[in-house]
Amino acid sequence: MAMTSEDLERLQYARELLATIASRFGVTVSQKAAVTAVPIIGAAGGALINSSFMDHFQNMARGHFIMRSLEKQYGPDEVSRLYHRAS
Image (cartoon, rainbow, N blue to C red):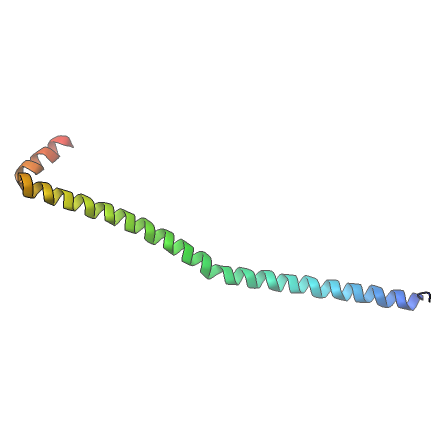
């Protein structure tokens, strides 16, 4: 059974219709993936910032308690004198 010109036109129309649907579906899926990724990216950025702050304040606290320990051991005046001499 040979295809008629009418069959070829229908086939061409079906291809164009499927291509249009596929392109719109692809855009929708891409937009949905992007929208879904926004909170994940935000959470990762927030975690990175929190980690940086935590590291900074842990280092500051460590330095503070080292200074307190030295002041307890050698006295605040001696620690202050040596600190100013070193800086």
